[in-house]
Length: 508
Image (cartoon, rainbow, N blue to C red):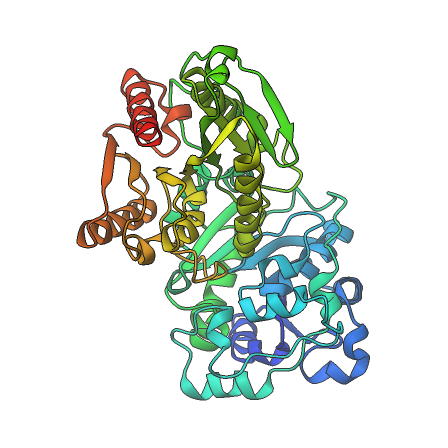
């Protein structure tokens, strides 16, 4: 017999699983909907003193008391944090972990990093916050925590009515994992109306940040539900059937991409496609300056190109972006052409981190412009991949010294399911909104993922409507990150053309 332990997200309790639990029991399984200490109707038991460790220990005790041979731990939203913590302590008792429309957190990651509501994030980041319980959403603000599509009006009213303050320590205390449960099989149940899908996972595995490669592990499967983020309220019967399929090991396995010309190993460590000479590099805090030769510097301050990486990038990833062959290559390439190439490490570690990354970029640019070897009136910003969202601020209010905005295979609006990204980071909405804005050099991969390609087309349509000058550099046979995965003559020619276009605008 299989026993399902059902752990809900913030502000809720085990009651959200009632109908799903009934369906599981009717199918012959055991079901244990959990209301954790300090949450839901148990809010008065520990109040704000409950934290993640409280919940991990509680789940461990529950697992220890279950006699069924197969225990499946199901985590939804915040609930996945204590689920992983308990599985790490009792791996021999857990048959499978189910991540219900929730990305897998990493070791030492606190749940607050993935809180999608910007007002809650701002509250918890405010130095004046008293550290008290986090207020629950209202009926109108529940959609900030995930799509409510398919949830009947009565159920949505009940969700709002029964929502309870969340103990802050559950969101701020980091998840500590020993690795004991790392080999346990995992099923991700993706709710497509909330923006997640198997296609999106395959895109991230193929060309997203390196940490997503782990999603192609043989022990991970994916199933989809055509509903919003609350399937236990919108489609409880379908959810029960999907959980039973997950327990049986069913689901789609994502495969890592196979390309004969790409060596094995992490994509971000592949060599840069151009053979460029080394250049003097100076480190200044979060930025590196790649300096042109002495003859060029003797002519006076030089224009600068600031290269902005995408992400999210794990905080402990080594090398960091500016030390990878990719950004070393771009920085040196700019220096070889007589301008200052600038690379930086900004702190885009999670989808909620775009404001912090944007501030890192502002500070980096100010530092670059203050350097006496840089002509502060001639600067270009060049964004890559999901770093493209950071272009929004500069397009909305372009300073006079910003001579050009470049973007390579960018996301120019948040991707499906990226509800945690603040609405301000939408370049498609602001391109051309200010008269006299900078020209754009946009490099487009012909074999781009549909989610990225859609944002690029929307951006081009908006730019044309608003009269923005766009130099479009197409790589018809190129994939996302074509400089690394498609190091062809056509790719080299595209990089050279894009750089010439940027430099022409810096020198005009």
